[in-house]
Image (cartoon, rainbow, N blue to C red):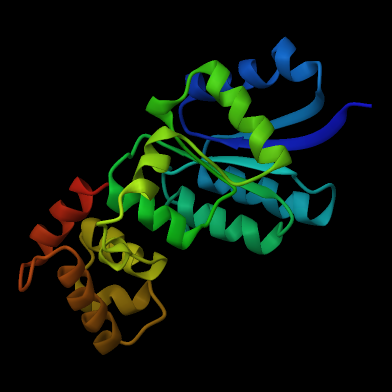
Amino acid sequence: MKKRFKILIVDDHPMIVEAYKNILTSTDIRDTYRLTIQTADTCDSAIKKIKEASEKVHYDILFLDVQLPPSSEGKIISGEGLAIFAKELLPNAKIVILTMFNENFRIQNILNTVNPDGLLIKNDITSKDFIFAFNAIVNNPPYYSTTVAKYFRDQTINHEEYLLDEINRKIVFYLSKGIKTKNLINHINLSKSAIEKRKTQIRTLFKLDKANDEALINEAKRRGFI
């Protein structure tokens, strides 16, 4: 009997979504699995589908792009935040993160904040690799593509150096939208002093010392956090 899985693919690029669907409906997959595939192209539509699934038939696997437009209310600003949200509502679902970002600091941040069942760097994977990854994630997770595996072999990395949690990411995100530090308390549930401390932490992580907000935002963009 074929294994049945309900899947949600979240990516804001229609061609990429179509490519994933084509692979997952190919003969190599259909011979072994029976898949029900749904898609979403925004955080808002994904949030709605995840909430509905938590009350009805849960998703078994979620494929999430990292670089997604933020939700309308700004509570979820990336695929990482969406993954954390999904884990809370669908604790038994397997989470697979797909991203173009291949720098060590981004890989480490995803591993620390999400700890996904699969982490695939898009430039690593062909159709054949995607099928191999799917089988591995279904049967024996986690699975990491080549660039992530190379990261694990690098023993010289200071792991803490690259960690930027979801609250710190939101601080940088709102600053990039032109919101002043004094007004961040209206968007983040922290005191002004706590936000200032976190901004200092972010500067330290980015090795920017006393840099202004513009420099902090530019560095966050360079590192792929916004």
